[in-house]
Image (cartoon, rainbow, N blue to C red; front, top):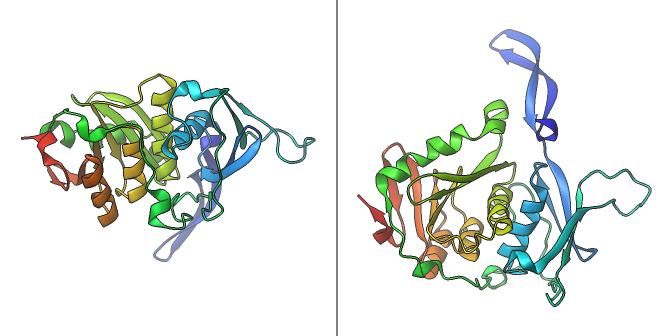
Length: 274
């Protein structure tokens, strides 16, 4: 799996017995995203699908609205041009006429792998206005279709199978067919990669789709769904109160605690049929 995983010798202790053995770890490395050669953010991510990650991030931050807003994306060296290209710096060139981002000094764009929104200064700073209206989406999804999605997501998690320490996000259609699955040490990065994949293929807004995340449903992940026009967000774990508030306000159906044949539908339950 290349740079997706790394090997390390560990000391294994079971009761009074101990041994040494190799373990597989998910790789975590920084990615600096630049826009027109100016640094914008640094996120800790699992390498791979970095262009998708950057495109998804720019869309969900409201900096672009379409793939045509991007002229090109290229890896480049760091501050010292003599350095070997580590593929940890990605420069995105905006298309002519697309305004450059205005980095607000009240926001900290550094995003750790556990929380991409914790540097925001206030709730108002993260209530980005979406160009799309997921609330107008009339899609319906059978509850029996949803119950099969966590298993389908897990089957596509190759890195999780070998490390046990990585998040996943998957995009499905209303019949439960998988469109794309991405893994990353950062749950927000996994979602950005999925959205960046869709942006690259001209599928945004993601009408009639279901976004499934392997962990909890946070405010940030809900906002990303809203920004991409996704009408149904499903989490296998708990939602936050702010995630439910935003989903209600934006017209997104929020489903959480999806385990076996049970689930909780927190907002806009009319889309889920039994």
